[in-house]
Structure formats: C-alpha cells, structure tokens
Length: 537
Image (cartoon, rainbow, N blue to C red; front, side, top):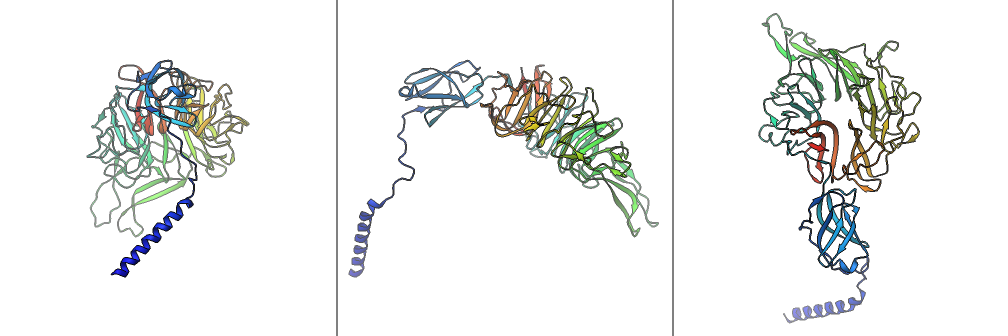
C-alpha cells in the first residue's frame, strides 16, 4: 500500500514538474490576439423610429458607444450606404438612401461590423392584402389560367394549397376564386401522379401536360398528356375490346385523348382544332385498345411510337399530324435542336401564332442556330428572324414576347448576342436583332434566370444575384427600358427562388397587380410559398 502511495506521489510530482517546464513552451495564438471590444451596443430587438419609410426618410436607431467613432462610421440599409445626420451617446440619425431595400441595418468601423434592427423600406411593390392564399403551395406552380367565370386554375408539382390539402392531398392541380380562396368543387380526385407543367382550355375541357402517367383513379394509359372535362374529371371513351368466342361482350373505358410522348411535356398550344406540344421528348406514343394479344387469348393494349422531337402537332383526338414539321425529302420529321429546347407561342402582334424556340442548342434542324429562332405556324423556320445573326453565345433560360412594346426579353448565361455585348439580360427587336438601347449592368452572384417586360415597359428580373450595378438587389429588381434601376420600385428585400411567370392582373380592390408564381420561399425578406400577388403602383 505504501509503495502505491509513493508511486502516486512521484507521478503527481513529475506531472507538476512537466507542467511547470512546459509553460514557456505553449505556442503563440496563430491568428494573433483578438481585437479589443469597441464598446458599441445596438439593440436589434428595438425597432427604428420610424420602423418603415420611403427613401429620404430620417430614421433614428438607438445605439451607444458610437460617438467616439463619429468620423469613421459607415451605416448601411441592407447594404446601401446612408447619410448620417447626427450621432449622440444614445442614438444615431440617418437618411434612408435612394436605392435602399427592406432588410437588416449595419454599422461599420473599419473592418468591424455591428448588426442593427431590420428596417422596412416603403416602395411601389407590396404584397396584396386582398389575396387569400397566405400559405400558397408546398411545391412549384408552373402555370395559371383564368376560366370564363373569373376563377383560376393552377398546376405544378405541389400536393397542398393554402393548407387545404392536409387531410386529402391536392395533387398538382387546384382551382381558386379570383381572390385566391381555394375552390373545393373541382373534381380532380387523386389528381396527377407526377408534375404538371401546363394546362390550356381545349374543346369544352382542358389539356394538361407534364411528367405523369396517371390522373385521379386512372393509373395507366397516359403518357404525359391527357384531356380533362370542364369539372376536372378525366375525359374517357368506351371501347369494345377483343373478346374470345366464349366471352361475353363488354365495354372498357380509356382516356379519350389518345396521344402522348415518351418524355415530359413542357407547353401545350391550341391551334384551332389541333394542338401543338413542346417538351423534352423524342417519341410520340399512341395506343390501340381493341386488339388481342399475340396468342389471341385476351384483350390487350398495344403501344405505337413515331420519332418526333421537341415539337409536334396533334389532332383533337390525339392522333399525330404528319404535316407539321415533316421533311418530305427525308421521309421523317425534322430533328429539332441538339440541346435543351423550350418554346413559347406568340400571343398577338405581327407574328401571332408563330413559335419562339430557345435553349442551349447551337444547331436546329441540322443547321447552325444560336440558341434562339422563330418558327412559322407550320413548324418551318422563319427566315425573317435575325437573318445572318449568330444569336446568343451561351444558353437562354427564359424568353418572353411583349405584344404592346413588340419586344422580346431574354435571360440566361450569355454574354454576347450577335457578337455584341449582352450581359445575361437582353432586349430584342421584333426581327430578332439586338435592341442596343437596353444595356444590362454588372451582376454579383450567379446571375438572372428570369426577365419579363410589362405592358408599360418596365422589366422585372429575378435570379440568384446579390447586387446589380453595385446596388444590393438580392434576387429581384425592376429596370427601365435602358437597363437602369427604377427609383421606388426596388425597395423589396430578399427574394429566394425561381419565378416561372408574372401575369399582369388586378387586386380585389381594382388596383394594378402582378400574379407571381414559380418555386420560391422568400419575397421582400418574408416567407413566401411559390404563389403570391403584389400591388404595383
């Protein structure tokens, strides 16, 4: 026992000796000594006075410890430097700068930054309080159309609308009243079993397209495109299938629109009693319902396919129109683009009914094409669009045509158009040439993925950018026809997500409004759920 105690004493003594010897061997702090606190205190929980206001408003923020640094202070409203009018021992007074936006305030002394309270900049774009869809959807909204009685139909990749699908899911299609209130009378049943990208009125019902193989109770015989009745049920037809001599006659029901595709359908365009379909497909698919299997022992569904890429026209019953984009000399449909291909149709204007094609391709129908071109109503290339021009040097993500201004707006990864500078957003004339009066400025961040011109000429741009021309714009901004930020319309805070489309409309009180939909989680630094309406002055 004594030997054990001696051993412990010796070890303890050695440990102390080692510690005392190692004190001088401790390495220095590798990053140097920390900065001494500056003694600045800003209460982030105490709202400024006033808590909101227009650019030019004088704002008071409670803070202490600033007076000794009066000449070094830099104050920002969401990144924009403000004019300091007064500093005391207990507060600081500032003028809201012209391009300030809703968000956090900061005060800087050298490389030391102290965060202050949030400030709401009053602008000319604000969420519409009369729109009753506070919770929006739980997934993307891809298309919205208005019915003849003023209600709205929306489709996308959601399973809930404004928390009305908690018990019974609202699968990818919903109908609302004009104020956004959910309309439970749509008889969509289980809805679609995959994403819906488009819905259009067609022959007393609707055509829906997307990436799905079933709708409501029907889980077969649909290939990304089908027809609905006006009440939301699937439109079916009765077929007498093959029966053996020992079987009694019967009728089976199948989708009445007998046509689809092997890849997703992006857009659907009615064209008289026909429909033009665009998407990421390679084959058209149809079905024969009245034939037996190979051994003639039972009825069967036989699938037929025809190679047709990106764009096809179908008859009202879903059969393929072989006169659209068919190359008689080659005895096949034209090959389309060698990259991603997106389409929109002209709605009004000189080229009403023609199609704009854009994306990441540099060839279309076997000839060079700079990621954009126009097709005639029969699907042939319109040679009057940008003749001899090289187009965009990189991909185009969005394209819209404005029939009022007769201009195209494009957004994407490009830096040039027809060999001339065009920084990610460009305005094109109706003939496809670059409108050089619009000049996009510099972006900090990933850049824009959406741009659309309103009927009054204003251009709304969104994306992953943080600043535009050095001004904090955090993903959403409004430009004039020259590419400059418009004062008063750029006060919104953080936008987070992707816009699919913006539609000009009115609020319940008759004021001018914009319906904005896509896949986004924040607007003006507040939670948003893919589907909002804003008032624009």
